[in-house]
Amino acid sequence: MPTYRADLQAIPKYSPGKPIAEVSRELGITNIAKLASNESPTEPFPEVVDAISAAATDVNRYPENSGYYLVNALAERHGVDPLQVWLGAGSTQLLGCIALSVGGPGTSALYARPSFVMYAIASLVAGTEPIEVPLDEDWRHDLDAMHAAVRDDTTAVYVCNPNNPTGTYRSAADVAAFIDAVPDHVLVVVDEAYHDYVTAADYATTLPIASERENVVVTRTFSKIYGLAGLRIGYAIGNSDTIAKLKTTQPPFSASSIAQVAALESLAHDEQLTERVDANTAGRLQLEDGLTERGIEYAPSQANFVAMMADESADAADRLLKEGVIVRPMGPIIRVTVGTEDENRRFLRALDAVGVTS
Ligand SMILES: Cc1ncc(COP(=O)(O)O)c(C=O)c1O
Image (spheres, rainbow, N blue to C red):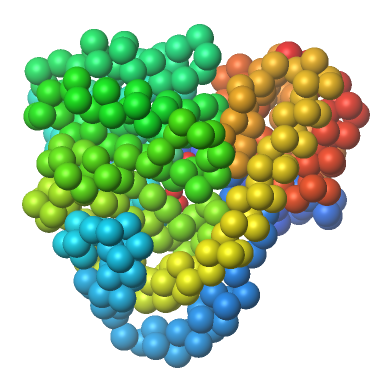
């Protein structure tokens, strides 16, 4: 038997949402609504699909490692220097590289609970001690408690804004004050995977702060609103020296050539992006109204999913699955992704059919 590192067993496994094909095979049903992985219910923009097809014949060559065109487009979009932009195979990869670059034995990393599970996994893979700080009573990051939990050996703090799995957010002013309060030796990673969906007036991106300060980076992804989850492409923005250091732990050629082309083309269609934001806002309201009508408690969401309290959530999710609706049970909650209008209606009807309560 090979010799494994002693703490390998202690690293939790990422559990992905069940694929549609698997559910279809196992239950013998078609017409499945997958509302489990916070994906876009719609395909990439048509122009992006065309760009992907056109790029297919170039895959005998390695991608441009610098990601020149996409990096420059993102730099221009966000008003930063190209050296401040870092591409990766999804923001998950960037989070992993960040954890490896600033962590390791003898360090600790802080994040909220519940929040995106990759902060825990990336920290443990790096050999970093995780410190979990419960959300406040409104299911938001408890930034005061997180600040109080920072230790001398803390090297990373993850702020998921809006938060997965609750969809709750902290205002621009709250995040800025938190960053000011955190000591400079701590890297603050603001994960803005769901940034595009936010409609709250007091929310703002942390990008302007990240582009100025050495100890702040923002991560973003093309997996959500742009519908490129299958291609694996995300980016981070920060101070150029910080980005150069963080890149050290990243394997070469992480952003594939097709992913780069698809992301670049995606940036050229802001009018379609706006339509998607509007559709998500309407769908989120449809779900929230439906839950209110049914007397089910949920967290007010600013993302493309809603977290609801559910008695025996794993069992409830199983019953919903048999109705052809895939959702994600997580502890005492079920997280449901905003789907198409029809999928959202199916989910609400399935709740009635299987009798989910909170
Ligand atoms: C908060 C958060 N960050 C990052 C990601 C990962 O995105 P990517 O597909 O870019 O790796 C997700 C995906 O679910 C997420 O919920």
